[in-house]
Image (cartoon, rainbow, N blue to C red):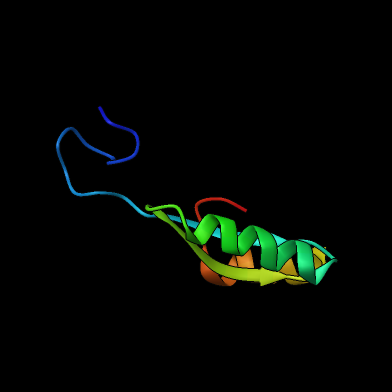
Length: 64
């Protein structure tokens, strides 16, 4: 099984990510880097833990 695809020979899978950091420049930088990768989609950014938990609950990312 190909982990990037999710199944053997199936369509490519997108990993949905929520980023959290109190420094905006760090969040934006990581978002820019991750956005360059195929198969990764940044679906939300949080400035603190409370906001991160809200986004995670609402958006249900694969990775936070």
